[in-house]
Amino acid sequence: MAKLAKLHRSQNNRMIAGVMGGIAEYVGWSPTWVRLLFVVISTMSAAVPGILIYIILWIIMPKASSQSYQ
Image (spheres, rainbow, N blue to C red):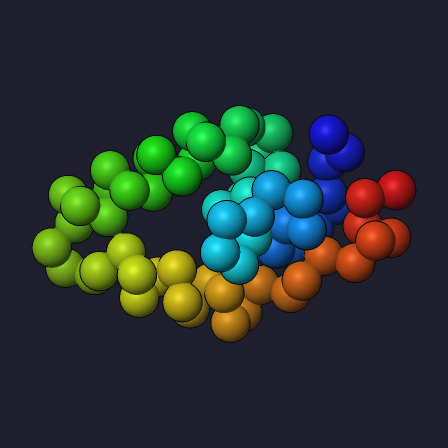
């Protein structure tokens, strides 16, 4: 798996929008662990719902181009 130079939404590791897959590629972790960590943190946080954070990241994170994986 190639590491991205910048934080992007993943084209390869996506379930919905590629947000968690992009974060996983950026930090070099398994996408499954990043998703599980996000779910755990989201359920433990009463202040800011995880779905709101996900939607904001979906909007602000650019989609990875094919050049990003070279």
